Image 1 (spheres, rainbow, N blue to C red):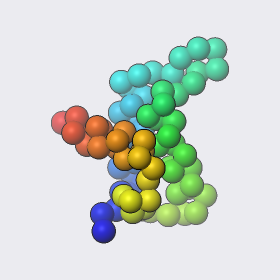
Image 2: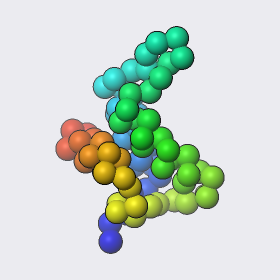
Image 3: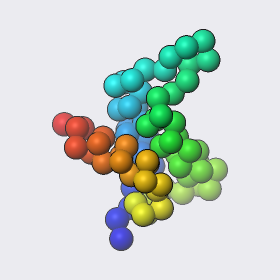
Image 4: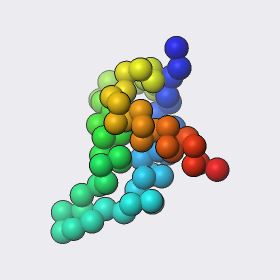
Length: 72
């Protein structure tokens, strides 16, 4: 089973925030950062340091995989 650390998830969110900054008066996150932020928030609330990759939704997995492919 593959796991994602909270630090790696935070890095993925920051990748998407840099790639597509918040916009509008309400500073809405892009869809990729927004969906990853939900799991990140749950990890903080639950004091979890890692989550299983298969615990992510399809949209979260895609956003995370794109981050991994481009993180240089």
